[in-house]
Image (spheres, helix red, strand yellow):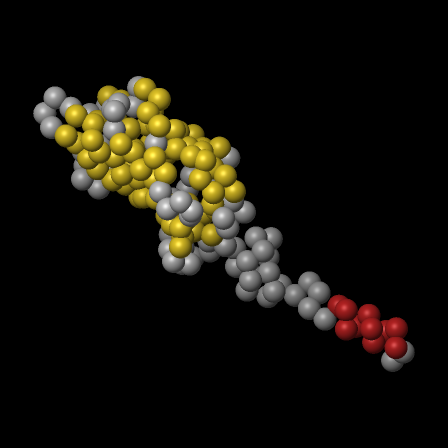
Length: 158
């Protein structure tokens, strides 16, 4: 083998090795979220809070779907089908597999009326599974001060 052929062979060691990575850039040939339980993001994804008192819907996200970098969400908060204004809404994004979140740790929703709250921008610093804990409280209904929380888990592709 000539020196030029040896050099070419050395340069190509590992070329096109499917075990190195895939389109997601994740090592080991697995997408960033393979095997992890996640919610499929669709605009308007809705879930009843853990206490069963409030309903949380991510009406839209920018970017859509949530992605690496700055994100802003519009959340619709309802109680008994009616928009709930005046709540203190907090979002805490974390990456469970890595044991970290964002900086700052939490983000306050801005009340936009009719039960809609804008949250963000918040920086999702890397691809993978992100857990989004949303808590709402402090809004007074006729009966009592209502509070509830919900968790959405999305795959951020990057």
